[in-house]
Length: 166
Image (cartoon, rainbow, N blue to C red):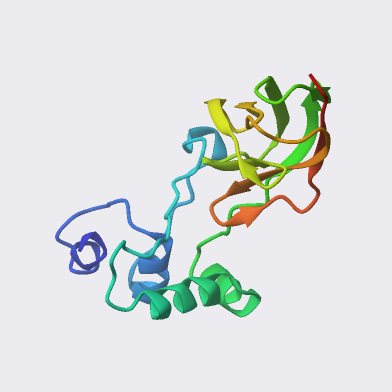
C-alpha cells in the first residue's frame, strides 16, 4: 500500500519492504538506512504451517522449498536474507547430573529449541549469544549431543555434554 502511495506521489516517503521497492522498479527510489540506525536484531518473518491446516503437506513442501538453496536464491533476489545457522561456541559446565543447569554460549541464537541427547531441554534464559537450559531428567549417563535449532536451522556443529551418574 505504501509503495503505491509513493508511486502516485500521494506521500513524500514511507517505509516499505525491500521486495516491494524492487517490484516497483525505477518509479521508487531507495534510501539505505545506515546500520547504526537499524534495529538489532533485524525484523524477522517466520514461516509455519497453521495447526489443523487443510493442506498441511503442501504447506510443509512450500516451507521446505523456501528453505532450499533454489528457494533461498529467490528470497535473496527479493531482498530477504536467511538467518544464519546457530553456532555453539561452548557449553558450561561440560558435565553434570541430569536436571542440572547449563549455559550454552555462541552466536545466532534466535528463539527456538535446545535438545540434549535428543530430548527437548527447558530453557530459562535466551539471548542472541547465550542460552540457559536444564538438562532433561532421566537421561542415562554418558556423552550427549547438544543442539540449538532456531528458525528451522539446526547448528551444524553440535556440542557435547556428559551426563554423570548420581
